[in-house]
Image (cartoon, rainbow, N blue to C red; front, side, top):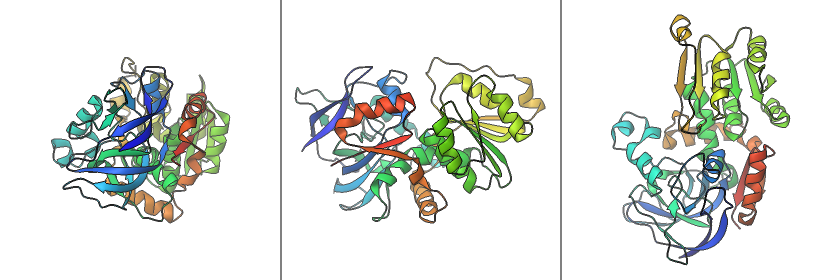
Amino acid sequence: MKTRGAVLTGVGGPLEVVDLELDPPGPGELLVRVHATGLCHSDLSVIDGSRIRPLPMVLGHEAAGEVVEAGPNAEFAPGDHVVLSFVPACGACRRCASGRQALCEPGAAANRDGTLLSGARRWTLPDGTRPHHHLGVSGFAEYTVISDRSATKVPDDLPLDIAALFGCAVLTGAGAAFYSADVKPGEKVAVFGLGGVGLAAVLAAVTAGATQVVAVDVVEHKRALALTLGATHDAAGGPDVVAQVRDLTGGGADKVIDTTGVAAVLEQAYAATAVGGTTVTVGLPHPDRTVSLPALNLVAEERTLKGSYLGSCVPRRDVPRFVDLYRAGRLPVEGLLSGRLGLGEINDGFAKLASGEAVRQVVVMR
């Protein structure tokens, strides 16, 4: 079938909205009509070359839509509303078997190679070039083919522009707070970086019962938004941010979540963590970056530093859990949404994301 999609052909962009030929779904795959796809820094990092991916590629990894056709042996049916997540967990490898589906080995290999979980590519450009898939989703298209292992069914009455956010921002940010940091009632929490992922972490820390949530960012309007979403304090990012956070929390936060992907900020987040506390890093820095930390206090202060990918979530378990919290009014995800765009406006949307003007925009297919 023919569809339109936003293709990255070279580092630096821009994305080109072009006509594509889309093959039908193979075994265990789904043809999905995409309704909404979020603009995320993980897409931006592919555009600017911070994350090296094979090109050309149809970008977009945080999406929701409706199943149109199911290939042989697929687990879904036409008409199902689904959230698409960016790790197509095979369910059978060593990591999946241990309950750590975010670390699925075949899924990671497929994502690295720009293919579906089967190893196939389903796109063709008019000149015969076969573009790659982005993290098994490629949501910046009117229709896409995915592995059914990338999909989680959601209620039909969940607005799909909101549902899209559960595929990355909510899983990654809320999961980091609920699971990776394991925020407990009464704890003090700081979140560095207030994009969609960071603000989702703020929401989850509040829901988990943190008595103090310090929202940290260099952008003032993002800090103001975090305060409306339940943060108790804010701190401006910069050279003195560690002192600010330690002063506000009386010696450091029990749990600190860094979503920036900036190595120097991770060092600040670690320094702002209390004795006996846990620092969780979510953002993806450039592969060449390294971090320097004082080694002694890892032992002497029983400190923990840990990574969190996809919020340490299992999408088919956690998307329904987080949707239930949203529908109960306890996880107000709609507060993350800062704008809706058409597919033709996608480059303007990424410019706003890069400048810090926007938090979480979604491309809505018309």
